Amino acid sequence: MCGIVGGIVDSNIVPTLLQGLLRLEYRGYDSCGLSISGESGLRRLRSISRVKDLAENARDLKSRSGLAHVRWASHGRPTIANAHPHFSPTAGEPLISVVHNGIIENYIELRARLIASGVSFASETDTEVIAHLVADLYRGDLLSAVREAIASMRGSFAIAVMSSRDPDRVVGARAGSPLLVGRAAGKSGYLVASDVLALAGVAGEAAYLEEGDVFAFSRDDVFILSAEGKAVERHWFAVSSSVSTPELGPFQHFMQKEIFEQPNALADTIDGVQADLVTAQRGEWDFGDVDSVLLLACGTSFHAAKIAAQWIETHCGIVANAEIASEYKYRVSVPGPNRLVVTVSQSGETIDTLTALRHAKRLGMTRSIAICNVGTSALVRESDRHLLTRAGLEVGVASTKAFTCQLAALFALTLAIGRAQGRLSEEMERDHLTQLQGLPDKVSAALALEPTIISWAQALQRREHVLFLGRGIHYAVAMEGALKMKEVSYIHADAYPAGELKHGPLALVTPEVPIVATAPNDELFEKLYSNLQEVRARRGFVYLLVDSDLSLESDDDLRILPVPLQRGPLAAILHTIPLQLLAYHIACLRQTDVDKPRNLAKSLTVE
Ligand code: G6P
Image (cartoon, rainbow, N blue to C red; front, side, top):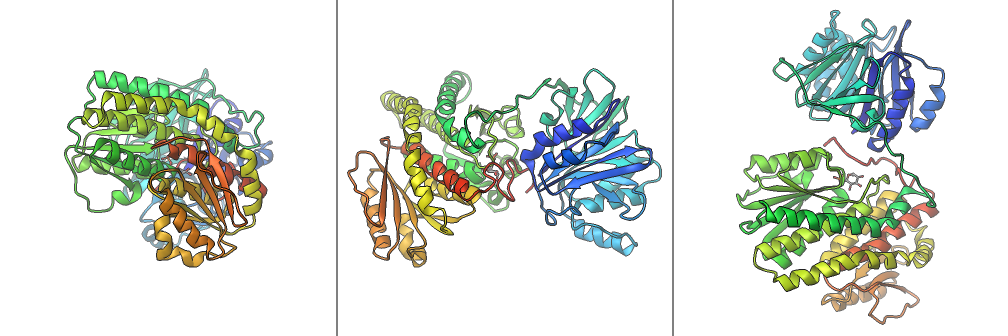
């Protein structure tokens, strides 16, 4: 995780580096930094504040070449010493500057070897070993030094390196983390970045490096070597000349804006996915012989996958399991040749999900569908098929509209599988689709509950622990509510299936530890309501989301919020909306950094 941008151009590169960092901030914002080369060698500026702060201090910097980085801390705290670029040597004139995404897994061993040979370290990072390794191997040829250094590194990384002795050269490599090179637009020069976003408007065209590639460029020339050391050409594509800067409009935060964008995002997703499925089924998509479904995802996307697994078992009559991607790839599992692998990801770049997909493929499960919000992402590229959600750009680190759009896409996919399996009649499918199409209006009605949610937020803002309860698919809704609460308000929140409460978590219930429960008016309602009576009997305070056709009154220890009525599977989407708003408004009251919560990042490309 982290972001890289750098290059050599024929004008001042510093504004390009800073603009690139601003666009990459979603990949990490624990610290940021840049190094430039000039007549007096390599210079560096780093900050543990945001890129805006770095930009303030970089106003007088000028150079035609440099490297820059935003960091999501993995090895070592977010301090200035740990911020990139890393230099070698640490004392005197620096020879080498390095920026790095990913993790060097054998860095402890490499660090010990370097220390034994007299190298002193200035940081706690794994990255610093790269700088010292390259410096140690440098004999006047940066490319050779980098290639030799890489040979002793294990892990997943993308790096870019400069040397003070050869300021007109950048060398870099990709091994597990994305990296691309770009040709400067309309002038001479080359650029490197970990995300094409950083190159929009500054590069005319760009090429993604492939696994194991090493590149070197000067102002006038670029060449790429494959993992086998052969000179290769990669596919160059045109880079968009601008990036639309997301506007907040009347909203205070992007998270709030994105919560309120859900009716439109859902309508777009439902239309798009339905059309895609119709075309796909006329073509070669056939779910008739699928005998089970494996859903792989992380974070919020995992909660969507968990809900979908239950939908698929209910409506398609085949086994469906949702697995946390980072766990799945390391456990011994039984593959199924007719199993459909469904990956779910907003960004399509989450390395855990990507590597879980690769693992499933290695096990022989070649039929895969990515449910993703980014059509150009690695997950989409590596999947057999894809269904795109049309949530639009999601800026808030805590995912909201992407989640509900994933659910809409997964529901449409469930119906397609159910039909192909002969479990859903045409009439049943049509009925479900009508419900799905009516969802955006109901979500708008759920958003109108905001004033009540604000009053709940005021009551809950000083609590340090909250328990979330649900049953059936609403257990996963409760998990998503708890995750949102943790992410943006920093309140410790856990979710339980309501029936599990008495098996342990009930011990936590006091007047200081409130319960938030999601309880649609379904066959489990009475069971869940009994579980809540057990809470109230122990002086616990309950905040309860119910369907609007239930006539329940609030009480001293019970607050009721009727949610617009949506019978059946899609109630999960409607009950999610108040939980998103609750986390958001508590975060505002607690004055947290809502759109960039501490320690988190929007897209995690390290394991
Ligand atoms: C990060 C984000 C979460 C997100 C998760 C999975 O942890 O902070 O909001 O749910 O990654 O991301 P994906 O892009 O794969 O859905």
